[in-house]
Amino acid sequence: MTSAPGTGDARAEALTAFAARALSTAAHSTREVPFSLREVPFSPSESPREFPFTLAPASADASFRRYFRITPETPWHGHATLIVMDAPPPMEDCRPFVRVSSLMRDAGLNAPAVLAEDIAQGFLLLTDLGTRTYLAELDAKSAPTLYSDAINALVRWQQASRPGALPPYDEALLSRELALFPDWYVAKHLGVTLSATQRNVLDSSFRLILDNNLAQPRVFVHRDYHSRNLMRSQPNPGILDFQDAVEGPVTYDLVSLLRDAYVEWSEEQQIDWAVRYWQRARTAGLPVDADFSGFWRDFEWMGVQRQLKVLGIFARLCYRDGKAAYLDDMPRVYSYLRRACERYDALSPLRNLLVELHGGGS
Image 1 (cartoon, rainbow, N blue to C red):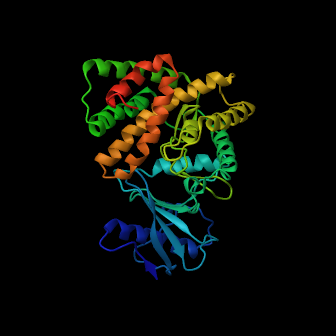
Image 2: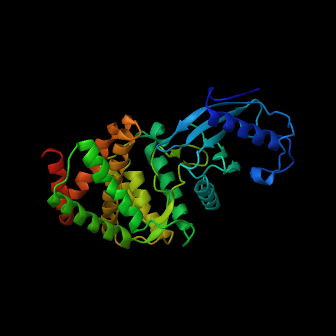
Image 3: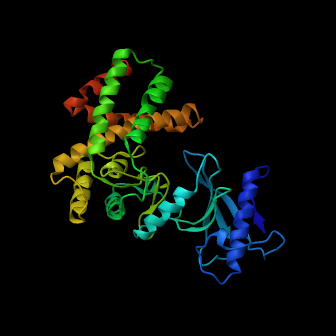
């Protein structure tokens, strides 16, 4: 018997039908998986033998995507559980996920395999990387191993880079991300209307940040390589939420990892892990600065861009999408931003503006 995730949800019913069709087709086929449902003709008049399973919510993310965990009554091609993604068109597009999954798996990384797809409806059947996120597993004892594994995987991902395989993380995209800060964090969250002088300071600071970001060597970039999207699995780590991957600045994913919006480590520990990445990256022939101090400066300036963006995104998730829990993580992100701005003279106008916007406090 197949159970659907709730009643009265038309997409859930369509998703259940997709999963039933995929599992039944493959269960009684001699073909190997993964395969595309578009490659396995199925006539509506046919009634394939049902492959019983249950379907329950697995997780949701900051977009319109939802994930459900399939538990077959008996293992399906060796899988005790599977994941089905619901990415409703036109808000979401499954094709980037499929493309990046293939790139990651070709690089030897543990990303979900796409077992079946219905791009028109926005459904994907995926392998399940489990339930043990880095965020839930990290502590002082586990962190050295988990971060070492994450750094090794990051180096492999960057080594796989090739021009034209992913969209560029260009000035237009970086600028759109920065615009989230005044539009959502300043205007909506702080309730402040910028004066002409304050807007000029922000625009000048954005220009400096962009100049640094765009000058950095370019590699494959996951864009959200952090503790909520890394799973403790075998092989470790499992990697999720990569559909927005681009080709961009070499420091970006390391910033996401070490200046995580959801978990914080001392700056001494961040530097230690950054040095370990930098050494491995140089050995692997990646285009990092030959001097660690130059690499660290690029890391921090890339972090400023990301932190401004994340503050805007978290505010938008709260005030537009009703996801107020993201407000709890804003102080951590703001702290990263403020401390980085304090260390560079060129960013002191931005630091002073931040103080003004927060009423002279920290």
